[in-house]
Length: 437
Picture 1 (cartoon, rainbow, N blue to C red):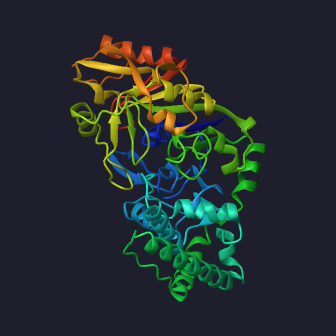
Picture 2: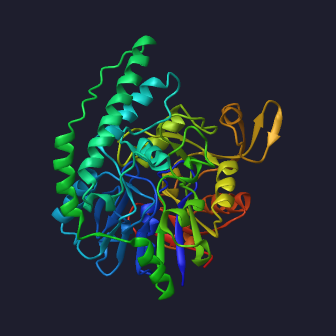
Picture 3: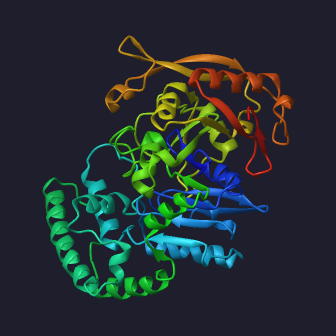
């Protein structure tokens, strides 16, 4: 069974959606296995641009089964806003979407908790989108205050919502009193209307019912039947809760190590992993970013690359390509080949720089630090390469790229010690070059 995964190797926003869309034709099933509505993919299909958040990128092909697996946390309102938007644009969503009954649900109290905890931090913001993702995963791990999709169809659902809402109200009261004592006053509506939540989520349950099933069992059956499965990662490996730049990370395993835990499919059935990287680096929210260019270069990258969040619209911080970070993420995720995206954005730069190592307190580091404070001190050591002026957005073959562009690609491949098989020179799936296959 040719199980294939697509994993971002930076801080997210690497254009994974385009790679998934390209590979979907070769697969029977596309699986989203972690994260929530804080992640976004932009896919150009039949000349139309679509922004996806929870729905797998395989949804544009009715013959492909799209699966939201148990490792995802679901905000039903966000999910149905996305479904309604797609259906309104003529995309069929029927039997080709499955949602795990094991997936955990985001409730209004999770979003309130997100805002309170971010205000209580008193330090640099970790970059939360305030969509309740972290608090939902927190409840999942603590177990006693968690509700899964399958629980919505049980007789105890109403009683459970009432119990958890009461617990959350008491928790919020305590947190807000602590904030007031610390003179960190916030103007936040913490009202939880339990009756309204029960009514609203009961309606969500009826809409969800046709899609809900045991996706773990479905995927294991698919493995036995030798079906082709494509695993679609969300966020980026450097945001992994265990292996990323903690605490400036997401709340799930966004590197390749999270595929099996989120989907339920053992790693031995995944035969190839594509690591997706931009030809430069971006990051959203707080946290250290060694190669950041908070200057005209960064602004030029942002404007040319349209570097604003798919979901949040937040401007992304931009900088040069970081070999140290990408090589670490590629090893962590078990990557076989690289997809180099947005190469066209670099056209017009006189020189390009690649970070090949860090200087931390006078020592040279070729490995990615495990502690965020060490990374904060990292001074990048750059290798300077010549740029190119040519517009490459319509080039179809690797051989036709400018010599300096080819040298840039080759040098990145050498430094991260991975072959580059896919190069993107524009947003459309036709603007893709395949090499080394």
